[in-house]
Length: 424
Image 1 (spheres, rainbow, N blue to C red):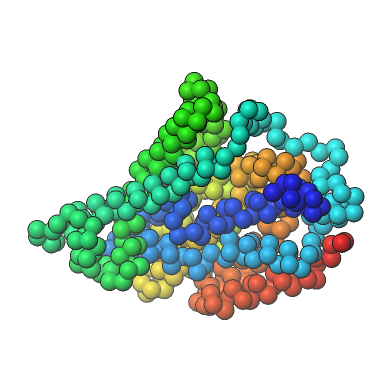
Image 2 (cartoon, helix red, strand yellow):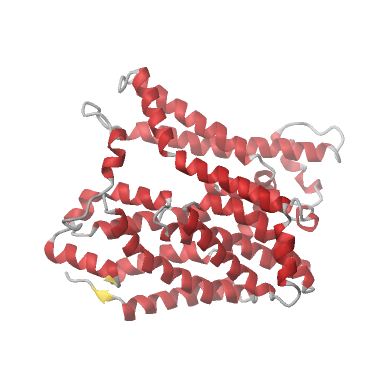
């Protein structure tokens, strides 16, 4: 889109913001993505330590019910739409847009983009780009992940059902039709689907689908003689190297999460909060904590790995200490599930060391620091509105059907009164 936005005199900072802020929020609220596969694994591991939840609610239904509290990801997408329709900006972004529209400079003259860091991954000059070579491997990952979730989930459900149903046939239709025999009693299509996906092995599904995508990409490259086999393997290794930092962060995050779990940190936090701490404050506290951790580590996935085993048990115990019923406790629990992911996305947007923030700068050929400076005020604005007018009232029991129009109206007012009209 760079050539298109350059012709329209849209600054690279604005392009980077749109790219960054329409990526992670979509992945965070979509029904089936690699992000959600990882999140389901974290939630399942944590909820298994809470018998009241694991015996009555499937993991996928927890995720689906948490979407109504995902204010920041949804409001970020709406915020971009309002900015675009009203042609207004404020803060550093307005200066960047004013520069681009008045002088035609889509980026500062003295700024340097980070494209040289990925120059070695650019295609060779003789290569003719074909969209199908990107589309097929990506579809392989998507379809493979969904298929893997269904297969592993069906096998897990079959194991559970075979203990209570004699002579159960190991076929998908047989397992699907017998799911209502499970203790959580899933009757509807959505409940059965949630039970299967919730019982799936997301790790295996992601591993085999991504590996299949790589192999398909290699076959396409070699069969079309785009690169020789040794050049293809070397190119793949270079691609793996770009993920090394993210892998290290995840490994360290998993290690830290395991340490905090074995130290019973959740119990310690609960004892510190005690009965005097109000449960409706837990989602907001989780949101802020997730944002701080994500900002410090630059990793949404690492933040989820650290905080889910920490805050979910604490949230449940705080609710029980305050005498909440099961439904009231689940409302807070689902809210915390969403706020950890939403806070992770906010911190990810604000962090200069975030992989998605860096990739947005690279893809848009924008100076990285300029991207961070212009995006930060917008991300903090949406985050503040989300937690004050969304997360806290929802934890008090206000319906999301009321809160989303209210938060959208607040964002509209901020853009209308604080934003400046861009020059034509």
